[in-house]
Amino acid sequence: MDIGSLSGFGLRRRANLHPTLETPRLRLRPVVREDAAAFARHLADLEVTRWLARVPHPYRLSDGLAFVDHVRHAALIGSAVTLALLPAEAEEPVGVVALHGLDGTPEFGYWLARPYWGCGVMTEAVGAALDWIHRSLAVPTITSGAFVGNEASLRIQGRFGFKVVGRSRRECQALGRDLEHVDTRMDWQAYEKAART
Image (tube, rainbow, N blue to C red; front, side, top):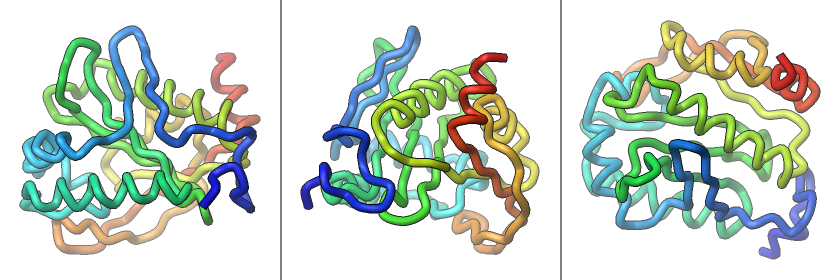
């Protein structure tokens, strides 16, 4: 598929769905097969995976390899962009930021290894990713959300203009049951307003 000719949300220009983004503390780059081992190590932590919908527990290397193959294919066909999050001088990722559903309803998601919680790393990564999406993709609105209890994730979303639009139930594969989910949505007017405050 020619990613420059995507219909529906499309692209503002011939956007590269494999960007590398730099912030003062981080580098966000396309996921590569060698990342699978780091993903397996960090996602073996139930305190991380319990907040994610589509991540099993225990999380094995085979899960990491399947994830890498899936997201690389999704980028090639133009349905998603997934970036590995690395501290500036690190060689291995400690999280992921992704926008999938570019061929339908775009949904933004992310996760971060527990040793990096609480120091603004994910806020910095989300900010860089949303800035790139805003400049590069003709996506009018983005959905996201978090399981009830994940206040840290909802605070990050609120900082960038995501508003709560309802609640739903979603499967948490790691816990093996459906959980209550806070649904959020953001448009670029809300994003720009949030950026000014």
